[in-house]
Image (tube, rainbow, N blue to C red):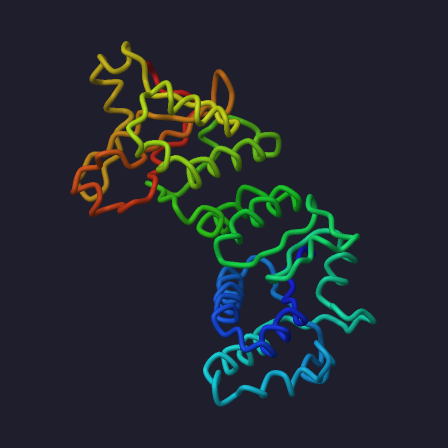
Length: 290
């Protein structure tokens, strides 16, 4: 089973050096992983008795207790919440276990990529909360998760998106198993780049080219559809009695599978009040009438 490991050696080194700000970020990242509840957060058994960075972990943990009391208590609580895995013979238990698993992630700020056994296509270092979404996207595909699973993953894979309704991917009229990698890619573009591309006074053709550079085909509606009031109303989403136009859409295939959205660009105050700065994913459809 895919897991995320706490790099106990990395934590010990930061404790020895009293790097409290870094430790707080590690704690916050681990807490987010636990909150998601998608993959277990694991730490080696009997961690307090392990010799790490030249000393027993419990000695390192409490060495600066007076100066870092709250942070140390948070580390204790995190250890209590983590799943336990059996001891290994290696100095870095977490890295050894990840390498043994063959796929997964490790919460660390260390230079793990320099290890000869590190496989960047199969292993993921999470140094901060902002790196959690990318790992979850890769894990979703690797673990062959289902459409039902995607609903649980979405808030953590795409924190910059808001969905107008409960996502129903069947409306795309495409086989989920053969479409999922492309779907993950399109939603990732909307989460990571859409607001940036729509907020720099780009022309439509420039935005289309920028999306294409990320492997995503998309466009707004053409003049024929824009002149058809009935057709344009089908691209409107109503939230709290406010109408939001979602004419821009990504194209999963040339003929079917459309994700209609609204990215911020001179967004009206009423719309900002409802969805803030997020990208609104309005519709999953096969293809709306022109």
